Image (cartoon, rainbow, N blue to C red; front, side, top):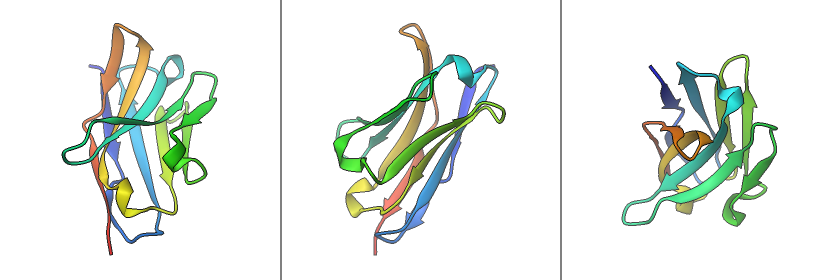
Length: 116
């Protein structure tokens, strides 16, 4: 069964760091591009970062220099390292693995709260 399991969310002070994990089961991540999205209460879901099958990365302007996406194909896991966190980063974060427009899977989401 194809699934993504997310972990690593939590409560952190402004300026702190978190590392989100997205572990794949039932398929091999190396064949998929992986994107991270976030959704704050009352807001639209926002694309935050993407890592391609060739391990190139792209980030939304608001997180550039602070967030880093990476991939470990042996562990079949992708990560989002989040540094210098701000209150506006508070959201539920989702990973999405995409092979094609008709072949993709979403993680269940993990809550990130940045507050003093």
